[in-house]
Length: 283
Image (tube, rainbow, N blue to C red):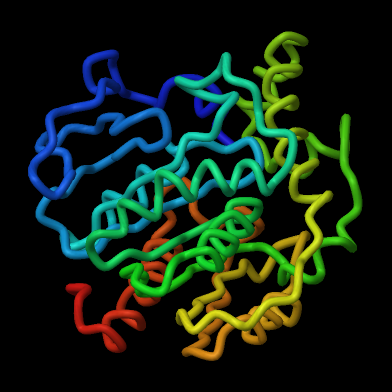
């Protein structure tokens, strides 16, 4: 988890973080990375894209998680990376007390923006947010598919073991540089507070019975992921009556990071799966 994600997105100056002028469809006109509003940052805006990919990061993660992914995806895909309260440009805002509150806030900003073919993508904790948003999408929402990465099926999350302190640091899969930064007690407290807040939401989650989604699901998991096995990831097939596909990639828990080619390839193929069903995502 890049420590820079706690602050403003890496490489973005104050001008590029300001909300920009938008066209009739609401798409930003600027092709520079910028913030659309409090909730979304566009790492590589593509106003003419035919598919909008809403992305939700792992616990404590931020929108820069998806920067390299946005650069590597087809030009027909516009990545909208979510910025959660309590991090980045929203550092001073309180984190919601429960998952339902956070999902309700996201629902009010995401669903009205499903004005073109839309896909929800979540990594780890973000996969739970994406799934809950998919459940709440109205019948007329233009939602082409759901991509979940590195998270057990929703009804198995109650079995997660809590983590804190050194165990939590181990789960972050930090680089040597990031571990050095965490030796500063203030930085460590700042980083871990955001991670712990998200994990509390995830660990308190209890799945409520509901009809399976009709939206196609693609599940992606690393073959060395210590948090979820491919067999556990395959349980997601029970949560849709539509197409289900699982992809195992040579990676650990945080598959979408650092522009790994296998991550970009897996997400591109997932979008193509939805394309073949809907005929609206380019190659």
